[in-house]
Amino acid sequence: MIKERLLLFLLAITQFTHIVDFMIVMPLGAEFMEIFEISPTQFSWIVSVYALAAGIMGLLGAMFVDRYDRKVVLLICYFGFTLGTFACALASNYVFFLFARAFTGLFGGILGALVLAIVADITPLERRGKSMGLIMTAFSVASVVGVPLSLWIAALLNWRAPFIAVGSISSIMMLLLWRFMPSLTKHLSHRATHQAPFKALENIAKDPNQVRALIFTIILILGHFTIIPFIAPYMELNIGFTKFQIPYIYLVGGLLTAVVLPLAGRLSDQYGHVRIFTISSVLALLSIYAITNLPPVSITVAIVVTSSFFIVASGRNVPATTMVTSVVSSDNRASFMSVRSSANEFALFLGSLIAGSIIKEQEDGSLQHYEYVGYIAIIMSILAILMSRTLKLKA
Picture 1 (cartoon, rainbow, N blue to C red):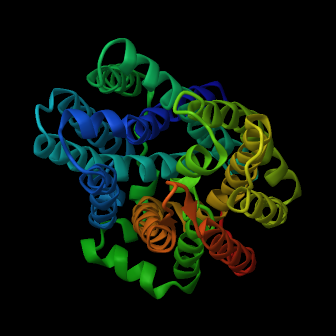
Picture 2: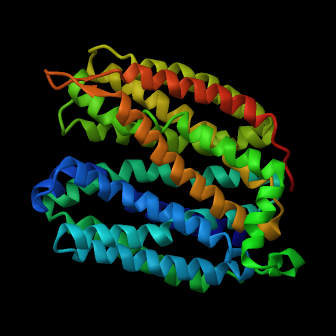
Picture 3: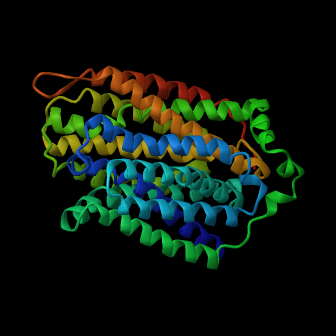
């Protein structure tokens, strides 16, 4: 049990570095546009190219990740991710930085999926929700550290400093994983592992349960990511936040979800993953409506509303992720999670595209039609509740 806890802790920090690396770009947008002399559209490519690369590599990774020792694949991916992060810090122009983000995304996409597959491999189903809750707490900690602290470090030193910090932590983590993580080869004893590379994708396509899980993943992402990219702009342009107050959204929300995620995992194990997912999703409907229809209010009220969304949206992701990782046996789990990661990344693209095509800027600089995006997210969330009841879980 002690070794399992240590490994879960190391995997949580691994996930933390991966998430922080993705998050630190967004709050530094204004500085990147000034330094690289680029337009907002060009900056959006800096954010998008990471997800695009991660999505593509996730599909390619599904063809080989289950054919090797989990430890070896994890260390290779982590090395590439770390190298890409340091390359971002060394970028001297926009094109260099763009390619560095794409390179980092190639490995980051597989890294996130592989961590979840390893967690599912090393913990039995009856304790898997709790373990997933611990791993997914990394997102909350990343929200607390990644956004406010990266702004502070960049302001104190320069924009390269956050990337150097993440790269340095990742370097240390590689050594710790190499030292303390055992070889994970149990899945190699299954004959399916040695099938031709494209067989992994074919197996997923032939399994209705896995296909439903992927559709469920896409719908769930559309159920909250459609509104996420515009939360901070809406709070700043419509509610009245200053640029220095925006980090409090992530600070407070991240701290609260850090407490709620492990609790969601325990409740999920105790009362059932579908039940806890349904309750959290119903509460999420209220938060989505509140955020996207929020009139000018005090900063305190606005933070309460945004924090409620962070809590319920993150809370429902724990049972959702546990269910998705449990629709496939361990011998094909990493392959499936790579494809699932790709579906996740492509859903991020789609959600951003939907929101960007609906939301308009008014003459006074404020945003309009955000509520329409909220209605779409609500519909997707309801569909996700229905889809969750069709998934069949395996140990």
